[in-house]
Image (cartoon, rainbow, N blue to C red):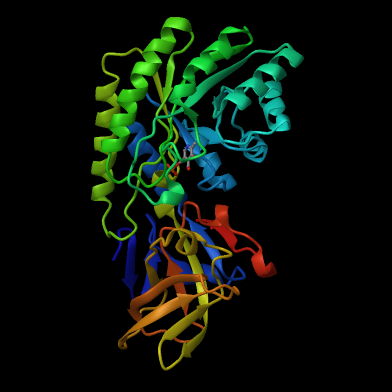
Amino acid sequence: LKKHFKYENGKLLWGLQSIDLQSYLNNYHNPVYFYDIQLIASRFLEMKNQLRGVDIFYAMKANPHIDILKKLKTLGCKVDVVSGGEINRALSVGFFPQDIVFSGVGKTISEINLAFDLQILQINVESLPELERIIKISQQKNKPISIALRLNPNVDIKTHPYIATGLQENKFGIDISQLDQAINLLRSQTLVELAGVSLHLGSQMQEFSGFQQALLKLKSDFLSLQKYFPTCKKFDVGGGLGIRYEETDLEWESQSLQNYSEIIFSTFRDVKAQLQTEPGRWLVAHAGVLVCQVQYIKQTPFKEFVVLDSGMNHLIRPAFYQAFHQILPLQQKNGPEKVYDFVGPICESSDFFAKNRKSLELRSGDFVAVLDCGAYASSMSSIYNLKDPAAEVCL
Ligand SMILES: Cc1ncc(COP(=O)(O)O)c(C=O)c1O
């Protein structure tokens, strides 16, 4: 079984405190997302320890649950946001404007106005027209703002194409060939201050050759920018540190964090830079499970389907990215193993959690836990088919 899961007296226990999930279910309409806040805290502390001196900005798009944000704030974490809604969520739990980095490719005028009015720490600028818009707003308001230029190094990190962001074909970041134009825009005015350079190559990085290549590429741009702009001191390495959904222990991930930090520190050993990072998935993915109930076991001459009361409306990752999530029954009963397709109630054939998956035999009414649902799960959910949202419970 995956780390932090065990069966005792046939019941599935989960988390750092070995909680019996079934015992919580009576309090809620199912399905329910459960989050283990202590697990998130321990992941954050592991990362903080490994990335000493690096400012950590949690990418709250992964999971903006209020209790998760509150906990991370108490531990000294800051936030990376991508909308006015996320800025307001961050403020509502007590983050200061100077704890906020604002990323995202389509910032609206009103979102940029908000960033100016609050005087947030930094806007990561994704395009020349966005830079022009920010300069115009600074002049209208006669107010300064700090920005970083998010550069697109055209590097492949070998992840799913839908979560790769550092290639020329992706909409993200300023192409390096346009850097001179960005420099000219910045030098033509005084209110928008260049605080640094940022990159984000995509999510679920499992190996770091592309990351290393991108850091080296952008390090030289960073050094040349410093010649024009003495204020350019920050280097934001983005998020993207991957996890292993299919593996049971977390050793690989700790090792991977270590390799990641060694690459960052060795690249910047000879450079004076305030380093920043924007992790999402690595901090929270393992700390969530989605518990849902079997409605029907539907047998056809070709397949056996487990029809759940939760589907792509609550967890779109399998449909969207062919993502893998382990599924465990809450009650461990004796019986044969079966091979099932786990599907949801939504009127789409892409509405499945797993196909041809071996499982203990299940019956209508049984509960199952879908593992590793702490990141990009409830935060990507919808009300498609006007199904109720899942409840979210912090343990
Ligand atoms: C700009 C930016 N930073 C950070 C992240 C977090 O990525 P991850 O959850 O893979 O660490 C994302 C996610 O896509 C992002 O777009």
